[in-house]
Image (cartoon, rainbow, N blue to C red):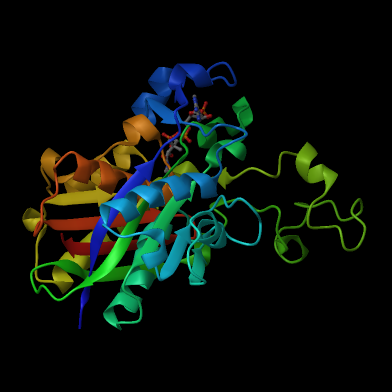
Length: 348
Ligand code: UT7
């Protein structure tokens, strides 16, 4: 059975850099607080008019396709992971298919937030292993800057996130010393509301009384209401400490699951590329697994948390910096809203 290799990888981040100091013009925060609690020093925000989740994903995809030595017409399947799609529907996958003038191939959208890219990779890997497709484009992209509360009320969430995209091309290999060894996916929906954006949605009828103003909205128009806007209910909610506590347990668990499944131990890892949620989380995971600094890649300092794009952006930078060579053991791991978490172990 063939394994998947990453034949090409590319990334795209917007030019606009927003430092922590820049955010202070919108909210009561400080560089010290953000650096100390998250490690983030700056993030990129997409151009308000021209750049979208899809356009950033398309730019990253162009680089990945070129580096794979193929053309967009060679791609036979698209998987697009994001929580900030251009449209509520359709998803971004078809926008990539159109923009790159691809054949009438399948386009799948994945909604798994921070673990979206690793989930997407896992789906692509199944098609490669079964011989269904030969060139799969997997994209992670986010435009968070359009949907965050930049007032002091939303500061616990808005200082963390940034925009950006990255993409890979998966191809089959028969080389026994290379490829994606295994993927491991998990979820626990008991805490689905701890990190969530409730609106627009269809939940209010059955979930939490009072979240939507039923008296105000006529039948058929409860999906969005004026009070949702007035009460700032169109922004993400997060209990940061609860997310943190779960993340520092589940990250090491799912990384160890990947290593044990393939008879490796942490010391065998050339590089761990964790989802860039918070530098303190990555440091905690590093400490738990007794990894050296050079075994863990972090770039949250420059990009913040780019959710579905964070793992492939970090992977792309690590590869560009020469930190990953053919045959190296590389682990990708992610944890986020849902909760969902996942890992993928490669022989690069
Ligand atoms: O991608 C996966 C999803 N997300 C995560 O993995 C996030 C995981 N959690 C975290 O990264 C951290 O919990 C945060 C960075 C979000 C928050 O750090 P914390 O150390 O857990 O802070 P906290 O929420 O307990 O808040 C401490 C204080 C509060 O003030 P009081 O009540 O102690 O007076 C907050 O109001 O810090 C205040 N605060 C801020 N102060 C300045 C919250 N946000 C800010 C801010 N600037 N941006």
